[in-house]
Image (cartoon, rainbow, N blue to C red; front, side, top):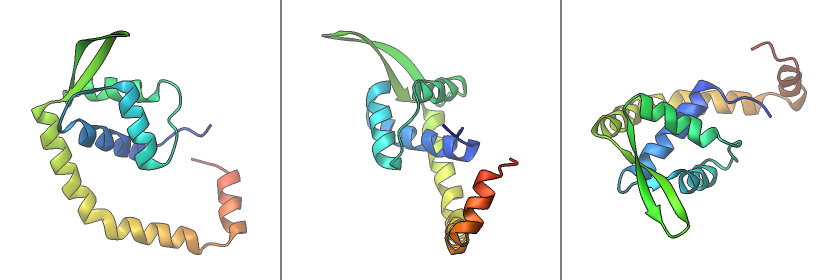
Length: 123
């Protein structure tokens, strides 16, 4: 499986923060929501790695909850996480035209051109 770049992990982080805006939730539910929203399945443990990073950065807080089937770790967005999400949405909004242009450019390449650059990775 190809490693995800920092940009895509950043998008995953924003999806998580958005999903925590109204209420705390636990990793499994957040993973399912990210999968649904981005149309890609996260690798095993990837959601927890990203949640841990968000926690280290002070954007989410972890708390223990008690459920019928055992303990769950719930995550909730912090005030810094809310500020971060709002600020990043402004940055994304200003970049939307450029992102669209990049996507259109890549789609305009022939299948052969795309395949040559994908199989000869140098990044």
